[in-house]
Structures are given as C-alpha cells and as structure tokens.
Amino acid sequence: MKNWDVFGIFLVVRLISVVFVQTFFVPDEYWQSLEVAHNISFGYGYLTWEWKAGIRSYIYPLIFSALYTILKLIQLDDPIFLIYGPRLLQAILSAYADLCFYRWSGTRKWAVFSIATSWFWYYMGSRTLINSFETALSTIALSQFPWLGKEKDESLKFIWIVAAVSVIRPTAAILWLPLCFYHLFITKYKKSSLIISRYIPIALIILSLSVLLDSLAHGSFIVTPYEFLKFNVLKDVGSWYGSQPWFWYLSVGFPAVLGIHFLPFVLATLVIIKNRASHPNELVLLSSIVFSLTIYSFLPHKEFRFLLPLLPIALYVSSRFLSAWSRKANTWRLWSVALILFLGNLGPAYYLGYVHQRGTLDVMEPLREIASRNPNSSSFLFLMPCHSTPLFSHLHVNVSARFLTCEPNFNNSDNSYTDEADQFYNNPNIWLRKNYPPNGTQPSHIICFDVLKPVISDIMSRYKTTHEIPHSSFATARVGYNVLINERMGN
Image (cartoon, helix red, strand yellow):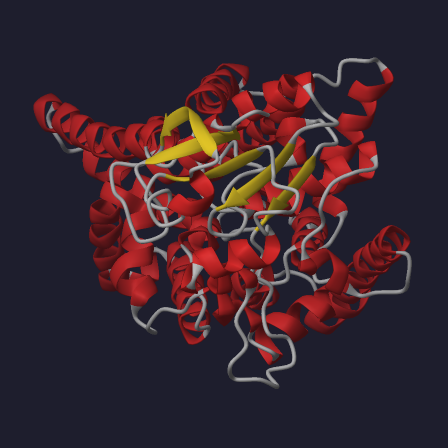
C-alpha cells in the first residue's frame, strides 16, 4: 500500500478517538451492532423490535460477532476487549477511508488537514454505528469512481461497494443515485451495455447474498432493504422517535456537521457555481449534496448522523478550494486560517467527545463489577429514556436487567397509544406500584438520572445511592446532570 506515512497519520487520529471519545451519542451505536453481535456470539442479550421486524441487515453486526467469537475461542472475551475491539476495527476502516479520501482529493496537505481535523468525523469515525461504516465505504467508493480527468483506465470497482452499502443501508442509494447517473453520462462504455452487464448483475449478486445471509440469521426468508423501506418510508415509523421541520438540515444539521469547515465550503460553492465549466466533478458533487438534502428534508425524522456520508464530499470541495487559495496566500494568512479551522474543530471534538453525555457509559463499569460479584442475586432496573445505556455488550454478565421500552405503534390503530417509557414518565409512581408492588420482588439496583430521584421518593426510601456519575452540563425533564446507582438497602 502506498502512502504509509499518510495512513499512519490517519490511523493515529482514529486510534486517539477510540481512547478519548467516551460519550454517548445515539442508542444505535450499541443496540443495532454490539448488542446484536453479543447475542449471536454468547447466546444472551436483548434484540430490539427492529431485529424482530427484520428491517436491519446482519452484515455489520456479524463483523463484530466474528471478533467476539474469536475472542471467546481464545478465552480473551474480557469486557474491555468486547467494548474496544469493535471500535478498533471501525477506527482502522475509517483510517483507510481517510487515506482513500487523500488519494481522491489530490490536494495533499489540505486533504490530510481537512479530514483529520473534522470534529464530526473524529466524533463518529470510531463509533460502531452503521452510519460510520456507510461513510467509510462510500468514501472508498468515491476514490474508485472514474471522475473526469482521471488518468487511469475507467474502473468499475466502485459499483460493487455502492451495491453493498446500499443493501446494508438502503438510504445510501440517495447519495449515489445522481453519481451513478453521472457515471453513465461520462462513461466510455455503451450505457445500455454497462447497465445490463455491470449495474444490474452486481446489484442482483449483492442483494442475493444479503437475502441469503439475513434469512439464515433471521430464521426465515426476508429481504431487509424492502422491510427497511416499508417501515421507515411507507409506515413512517421513524417519526415516532421525533420529527423536525423540513428546513432543519439546511439551518441546523448540515452546518453543525461541517462545523467551522462550513465557511470554506460555502466559499468553494460560490467559486464552483461561478466557474461551472472548470469544475465538472465538483459541480456534480454539489448536486449530489443538494439532492440528498432535499430527499432527507422530506422525511420527518431527522438526525445529524444521517448527514455523515455527505461530510467527505463537502470536505473534498472545501479542501480543493483551500488548496487553490493557499497557492496565493502568504505564510501568515495560511497559518492563521489553519489555526482557526483547527481550534474551531477542537472545541466541539473535546467537549462532545469527552465531556457531554458520558455518564450513561461510565455507569456500566460499576454495574459490571456488581453483576460479576453477584450475578444470581443482582437485578438492574434502568429508569431512563429507552436505550440510554448499552447493556450486555458492556456488562458481559447474564444478569437480570430491565429498561423502559419505546416500541412504536406499528398498526396506527389507536391514537391513544403510549409506549412504556412515556407511560412511566407520565406517572412514575403509578408505574412502579403496578410493576414493582411494595410486597413484591424489588430490583437490587435502580439506575436513574438525578432529576428523577425526588419524583420517586417512595421507592427510593428503600434504596441508598452508591454511585453518582457526571453525565451532562445541561438537564431536561428526563435527563439529569448525573447518573445514579441506587442499591436496595439490606441487599
């Protein structure tokens, strides 16, 4: 592999993120990957409704399951390896994707600087999220794409990667649809022949392998991309987990993901639009961003992480602009801009990656120690918004545990439907008396945020707080400043 020195820089950055990104972002980082892998490899664990409904592909969790199985066979299935092993794998893949970005961009120093200092990629690159996996694969595919001006013979390897990532994460097709049309426009091959001999066969091969693997894993025939689209588009189940106005991605999402790199991106966009004939590749990349943002904006459920695959494209555009600008800039301006960009990314990378929302991860270490000492007599009740913490992938003890669920109203048959988490928060004491009556069996430990403790003072009178773990500088009605572990007195 060429450019080992550049790869080394990227690898160091991603490995640093494994160590220093210690905060909770979204539940899918654990419940759609590590928890599934743990269930496959060790035979116990909780599978969320998505896996019962078959809307997720097993391909990504199986990568971690393979690692877990190897660790199990060589008797190194220590929780530390189970937690950090998958993150190391994702970090290595992300570092290789960074190298592909560097080769693709052709801007050398600014390419390294842009992708290595991006706060959101630092924050996401080593997380075990399908979005991180999707972004890494898409970046690799972008580097293989036969762009205009590329000296090498036209390569079609990218089609395999695009087909795979679209099967694993169907929304990836939104990004790649305009790019594939562009390929058909610039290709040296006959368009109809290319579609018939390459696009369709490759898509069918990848889809068939996916159906086979997922059907074996689910225990019955299933086409997960179809189920994904049925639940998320036709049934709009995603809206159950929150919705945003149509302009949210434009006003909040995209600028936040780019961070301070948004400024050179805007300047680069203006230059490209003004000189369209000189920037055909960049113009189609901007079109792909616009197309993706437009489609995403029509979907009510919106999240920052959904925009992650657009990040390397935006950084490609901005890094090429910065490279052209730096040829005329004096040393003082060059270092000033670099310092501003670096410090502008350093703040959110540190605070969001190391400080904000880390309590729900830190709490798993003392819980693991408790469960390991008394696996049979320990029972955990998590009174938090659903999936606020990991579970068995971080405990690695088959202990009794219960948390509040938030399954959607699949049938939309009852407008008064309320999920378990909302039922609890609507009246915590009634829920507790119903599920844990005073004369019944009580959990050995209750894990909750500090804002909840005064509200459930009745049951808390039978518990003592043994751990108070910092979580956030901001509190809401359901999420507090600290995570508490409360142990039943006389336990």
